[in-house]
Image 1 (spheres, rainbow, N blue to C red):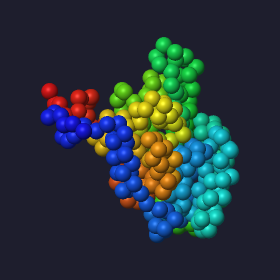
Image 2 (tube, one colour; image 1 turned 90 degrees about the horizontal axis):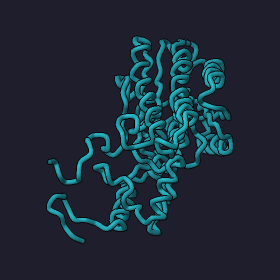
Image 3 (spheres, rainbow, N blue to C red; image 1 turned 30 degrees about the horizontal axis):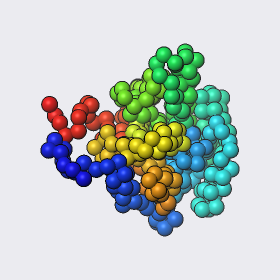
Length: 330
């Protein structure tokens, strides 16, 4: 181990760096199995899209929302493979929470309109819509076809527009019989730090996520004085099924210690309860605090009642700075 006067601390090898990352993540670990039930979403009716991945933000949010007392979760994904397991997991663990699953495209207007109307018909209200569905492309500029560009816009941006359009209509309905006296609700859109500035994704992906951030800001003013809030979450590097190729590539090259090193926390983030990372023969096997799902919970709950029209970066500080050489300011 050596030292560099331009940096605050010793220079670590990649293996040492990753071990340090693991240690830091383990310090923030928690167990939903033993943590007391919360009530931040008590009696709230929620829709979440993009819940199909066993290692993703949507599934993590569904479990956390259930843990925090949501009354009914409507869970949507394009791939229906893991939906029965998610429904069973929630309803077996949280007997007071109902989970309804639906295989559908989040960019299908009929499906999104339908699930919002179903929530109002069955529960008399809709309180939260977490539009989390999306996908990441891999192609560089000159290999990106117009079809791929438009598919990114359709899946990532159009899905969020449809969520705002139809969820806001459902949320605007008051219903005294179920305790909803006034219009109101929270719409949360999954964007990305790639939608804030360059360097975090392909052109089509970044453009689509920039559109999501704009939708959040514009919608907040379109829905002014309705009590309906719209915000976006901008994750940094998070280990999910969508980013699996990035992590696998780093493992194969032996450069896993560099994952997340560009942000001031010096690590990647964890989205869900269990992480299956296995780099340098180290494995995180306990339940981790779902760092992105907790941001969604904050925006879904009344804790964020005065937060509106914001692009909420959860990226370890990555987007706080222009690119610099670590330790140098000139």
